[in-house]
Length: 130
Image (cartoon, rainbow, N blue to C red):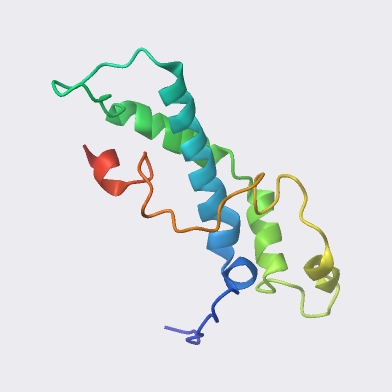
């Protein structure tokens, strides 16, 4: 494997880990948005104990496809540039580091920095598997 092991200091994830910045947060945001819309739509089947049944696997798969489609290739390319991973060696792209994020780049609207693992919903692997 050709690569260097690098330790990312605490608090630097938003600047150095491209997939967290450009893919994971927006993907989870769009997936959670669809789940919330589904919950708010109401008229759900209930379990014998009276809880709302989890969304069908087919519906979850549709949400996943839609959430992935909401992340543009251009946004991913710009994210790598913003994190200095694919900037041109001649310095012609260095200005990207200091540009403000466009509305569709890297982070859609406001996305919480808190850990997503403790929240319920379709991002929970257990729920998605059932």
